[in-house]
Image 1 (cartoon, rainbow, N blue to C red):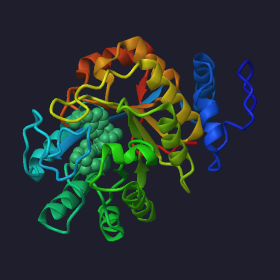
Image 2 (cartoon, protein in one colour):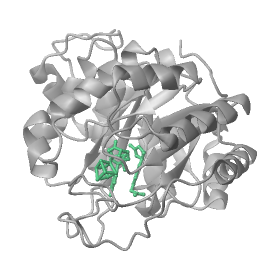
Image 3 (tube, rainbow, N blue to C red):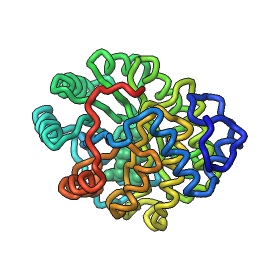
Image 4 (cartoon, protein in one colour):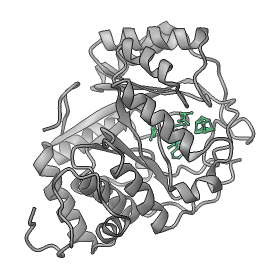
Length: 334
Ligand code: SAM
Ligand code: DTB
Ligand code: SF4
């Protein structure tokens, strides 16, 4: 595609490609910011209705006590964080949250559990029941439960699970600065298991963990060169958590969020790009710039998993000011 008035790139944009080179990703990522936003906005309009934003709600169905050492996470048992741990919530409680999320306009409900991996036990049986019941309510159901085997992915798929979130989080080479209790290859394997079970893949990352621009470029390159692009790509700004190794990281600049979102949009044109953690610290115009750069999904509700998120009323005002409308559930991207 030729986009007028943009920096000429020695590569094609606007088409679905899986053969991006790291150099090409770097060239896009480092474009002059407004040129980058313009290119991303143009690609966005080829594949999506730019007025539509997907509204998702998160619920932590099992909080804290996780054996892993992810340096950003409030739920890792080894760090002394302010999070109150709890066992798996019962089905009725979760269904009540899902009903409320639907009533507030969410079309996707994402359940998170602080597990290293799923085990074939009663808790997994309960999750399966939750997936069935929330799917029957007409919502897209997503889970993020840690590592999955191919058989477990298949079981979730049979229950109607629409999407599975499993983030790569950062570059392969920076990963062991952040996590040592599982590997990047483990993450890729779970994503492959999810893909094989015909569940939609949600995978993205976090910025602000001390990584370099090259690490961010490498993360985007890995995602954009998977055999199939993830259907959704969450871009999280680190929420620094007291007690974790990353507690004192400086706040991510909005320009970095915009650059990350715009590059993801150009590399993976069909994906839903989610402006995820970090909205609580952003003004309306800053969020608008992220939407302009190709973000078309958010988490709504006053809590993410364990940290605060903008109030429903603030988001309603944002949608009104920008004339945005919620994207219907199960809509296929063109
Ligand atoms: N245990 C599962 C796993 O590791 O995939 C699911 C839950 S985990 C909390 C889901 C994702 O939330 C992480 O991969 C990370 O991208 C994001 N996340 C967690 N804590 C965060 C934080 N403090 N700031 C930004 N993103 C965070
Ligand atoms: C994702 O990429 N971000 C969400 C969701 N997937 C599971 C989680 C953000 C968590 C932010 C920190 C917290 O609330 O604990
Ligand atoms: Fe947190 Fe998930 Fe890592 Fe556990 S595996 S510490 S819940 S990010």
